[in-house]
Length: 231
Image 1 (cartoon, one colour):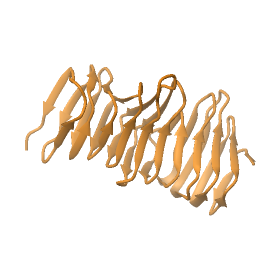
Image 2: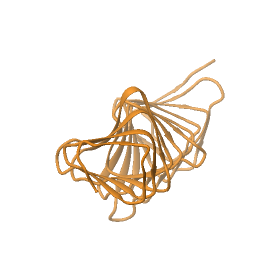
Image 3: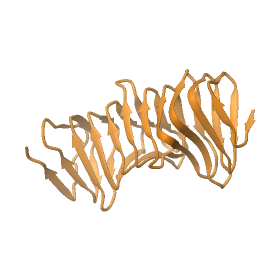
Image 4: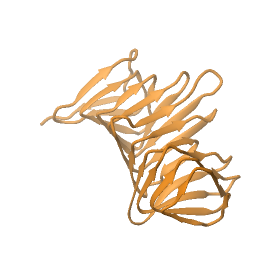
């Protein structure tokens, strides 16, 4: 089914929904997706818009599958997305406009592509995962830009990286694979118990005050700046 500037409310689907280039599809309430929702940008901004509190239930997949810019964004009063689906591909999640609870999987799985988590707070359940499914020949990346990731795990395949840009934070996150790259002029603040891989790049790492634990499972890390807060 092709969607052009549509609104979906209380929908249960096991089929294929395709959001066309340069259009916006709006979600309201609980959407039970046991099929596939695909954003099909061919060069123009294409949106899946979360209006208010939205739950993506079911076992389905949301695919940021276009060749151009695909976005999942918020609108309305206090937009929040709670997702049990797999959200995969390359594109932009949040764009500074919504809260996000991940009870499913975010998967950057497009060769040479980046899944950007932009200017939002992501709260992950213990089973929530952010993955870059890279392997030789299928490099993919995660970019955390001015965002906070709380809980769950970030899992990187061979040749894949997670990059922290802007002013970002992690709390109680396990990162496997690696490396974790701190972009120029970035600051990553870690709080709680975190397990991190090798850290590289020219950004700075801040260890928050209180009970913060960093465990490194990677190689030698090189930091441009390290700040350990007191109190």
